[in-house]
Length: 224
Image 1 (cartoon, rainbow, N blue to C red):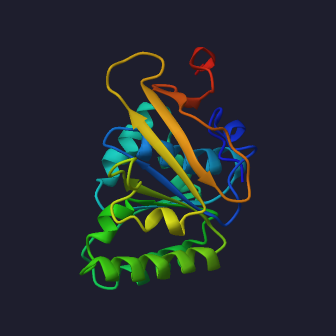
Image 2: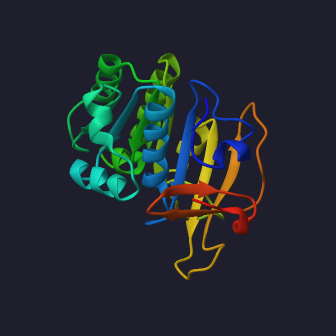
């Protein structure tokens, strides 16, 4: 499945594995949500593929305003029935069932869950987190969707997610970094793993501007 994001499909040798689970991890402001919105926007606008954005900790209107700043009009795509945004309270009872119900009712090709870290906070303990995440991953695999899960990175030396289980249920892990100092290599992504597919190694620069998001092995070649 081509993401449609400028330069990214070249880095992962053509696109994401269809029906895969992909972890998008990083610190605050690293670009996780923007990347995830680009995944849905490009899918709907370029490939006519339906996308579902499930959020637990973001105001949906703010998300759409952020997207509009990058030239992505989700309002028109919603009117066409190609995109749906859903807010779920992180402490809602039977939260996994709610997620499954939203996916079944909309039948999207692309799903974003933002963030799996916030979702995990609703479970009682580490055992419940692992049990529920594995159950949710099993459901994603049964569905026809290709999924992005965003997560807060704890430490590259230890794990790429809050509980350390998210990266094991994922087929791919994309680690986003933002130094906050400026310069061509200030924003980078590392492709930690990608099952059944080749990919580029090392930190890869990317840019976010009012024209969108773009990736390149060479920072000087990034153009928007």
